[in-house]
Image: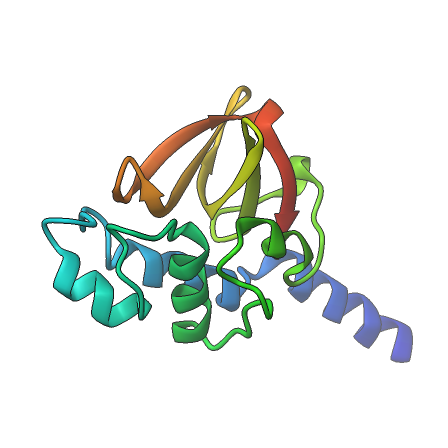
Length: 147
């Protein structure tokens, strides 16, 4: 009986959507289209910083995580701090709502996975061309997937 209960728990954990990651995706989507200049007042109120003057992808993710009931990393404003958020997941097993850290030149960018194809990861995040939007990144740029 204990083995059966254990197997049932594994089945549920593997087949049910993770509500925490789904909630982060839903929270991020509420801000889609907001621009750091045109919508400065609203973004400034949500983020606690002026997004027109500060790199803000990490700030956006911190706000999204808190609204979803998750605890962001201590230095959440730095995209690289998200390398240690939640639990690691292999890219092959990534699903919408997971936190993705990508390498961009000499730095990092962080966003939430919206879709994954053979060659790209579509992320929703802040400070993507100065706004909250969906952007495509090469799978080769992905350095971490966190759930």
